[in-house]
Amino acid sequence: MGVRFPPGLPVEMKDKASVKTVKTTTPTTVKLPKTSFKDFLKGVWVELRHKVKWPTRKELIQDSSVVIAFLVFWTVYIGVWDFGFAQLLKVILK
Image (cartoon, rainbow, N blue to C red; front, side, top):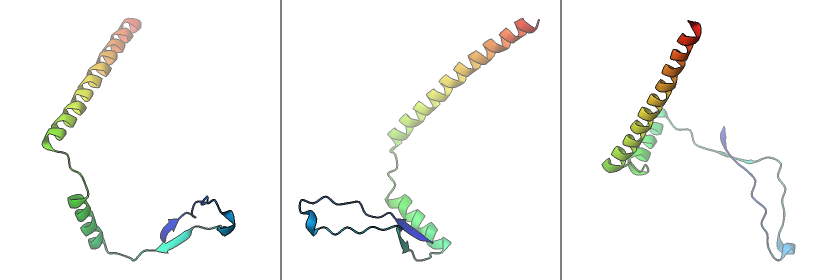
């Protein structure tokens, strides 16, 4: 199993006589070297340490506050509708 690359995009040039077109029916396949699970975990650790942009404390508190406010709002909203429908159902079934 390998990585599959789609065929290249057509190139527009002013002098079309100098451009050679090649049509391919199958994408190019590149074989990658096999790695162990330990190497995979090392790569994950390196990516987490050096490539991931972690939020600052201020960003984390702001984003968490927005999520908690959103959850509280929708919990109350759905709870009010649920209570209303339960009361309506009690009246109908009496």
